[in-house]
Length: 122
Image (tube, rainbow, N blue to C red; front, side, top):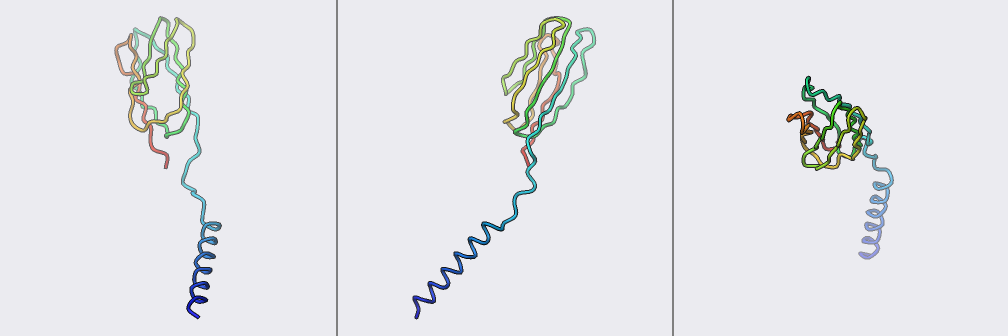
């Protein structure tokens, strides 16, 4: 008699587990990955004010830049570089896979061009 009682309890537990697994709500809070595009016009006589670029981890980021002279942009910690030829549009595309704040530096202008803020995906 004890064996049949344990079999019934085990079958009920298994049934409840299967029902929970198949009927559990899907995660509704996760945002899908997005693509973000940011543009910069570099003029040595008129340096642009530093900007804050905000994205979520896993998003694709495109940086577009143009300069009247040779220029070099560096995204720190990602260690990505964008080299600009005079009056020729350049682009850098990457996935924001690191969470944190990262400085985009304009080497010839000697200044911070922007801060990339990458937030964890909710």
